[in-house]
Image (cartoon, rainbow, N blue to C red; front, side, top):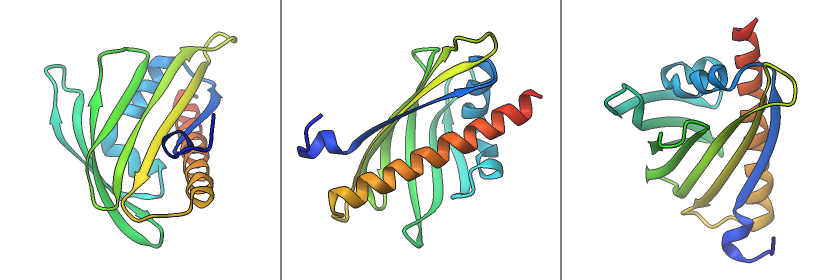
Length: 154
């Protein structure tokens, strides 16, 4: 992975969650409850759903960089093992595309989670700061997701 523009903006993290992929997916798709377990998210509103009632467009208001930011993500449910999204509108983000891949873990009743995020801000930020911030956001997101799912699974 070189240090050229586009590649440097893509970050991938992995974790194992002690719950089934279905349980993890259920938490990821329960957008209205995100603020209960993701402290950076102040408000989440589902704008559109598909025939099965799954959210296809979701607006988020988050605290970031010391101020409030809002963005809308479009969700793709075509692969049952993946929760994928792309940015459709953002005030400080030009790109905020990513996915969670949920696969059966080595131990029964566990899930191997891969989280990939590709972000680009409208405001230029030095690459190393952006990567460090993205890494921290992703690490926090995975830790909070793991804690939420494992608490619910008990």
